[in-house]
Image (cartoon, rainbow, N blue to C red; front, side, top):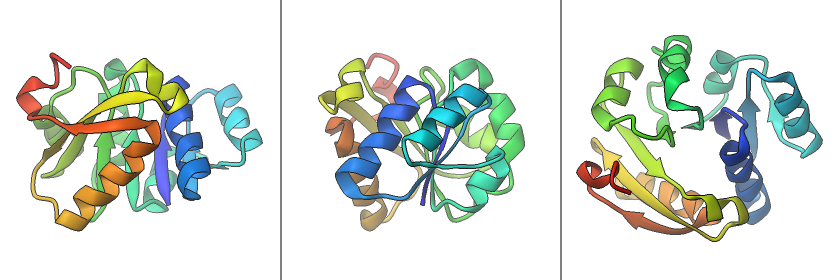
Length: 159
């Protein structure tokens, strides 16, 4: 299962694209009850909290605003071993993500607005050690949002 923490506009676009393009099982959690109900109406699995979502997911996508990333990290730290963790939190570096999440690898992603209709350009940085299979899995999933481009992490803020 792909778990998405945060079901705002971009979280919604990712979840629905993964489900419709690849038939992925997608689970979500959002603090906003209206957003959880919308996810349920769209046929996604809704979890009661972030910890439950993470324990049920192989891939965890952090689709939250940068100002709440540390609060989310506090809820899921220690539960991410063996999981692929992908963050779309703008401006939050790989080093910061690894530190606050307590992990040694993370994928940092910068989608753009056209990704909402699967026509985006998606910059991707792999920070840490990933197998070729893991890299291809992430790139395949992100291709649901549009074209993907690997970018050195040092350039992500410019993206």
